[in-house]
Length: 265
Image (cartoon, rainbow, N blue to C red; front, side, top):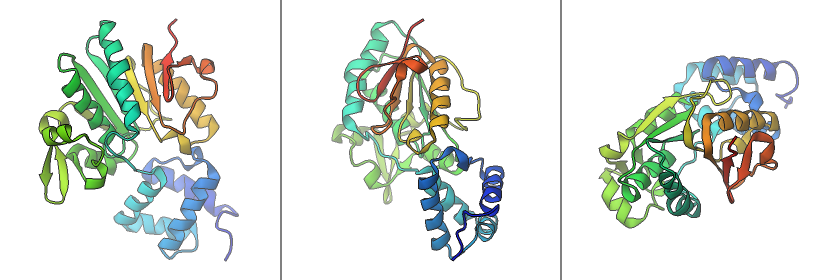
């Protein structure tokens, strides 16, 4: 079998995919990306990128599967619970003690919304006196539609503490739905982290398990954009495999594992 990555076919495929889905495949680490693409070619019974792209054009489900495989839409409530406990016991109280009003949070690369809803539940449960707004964005339009519905599989809510589960979820057949009062606190939008301009003035930006798949150049650009989007002393919350090696370069200081504070001017 001829190597599908040799020749101009792969480059043309990447350009066509960008136009069709807004996914820029060049921002991903190529060895990892190519393994996923080979798996998709095999799974769909095609040998060339021309044939695979035609399938993406003709088959909406194939398009959904492609975007899901490339962007890794894995999500759970309270994923890495110790980190959310630090938000609850340390960082959220700090925001409030500093007199921050109308706290602004952003779940960047939110997938189907479990993290955004987790933050909303925490604020409603533990800091009911605080006002906040919560933005959640993802590049995938279909994922955003799913996130707005707020329904989840049992394995996605398995780490929700029992009292919170009983209070904030309702069973809907074989799935569980976040109550409307929580849904209303989260605004979901599509957005491309690398290409779109960011809003400004966030107290917390959570971008976890997204940048791990990006090139170094793409990561560096995102760090700069996140730094500009945060308030002074605002926090960037990253995944457990996404440590920033030299945060000072980007205007951050470490605030403990997985958290980086914007350095005040």
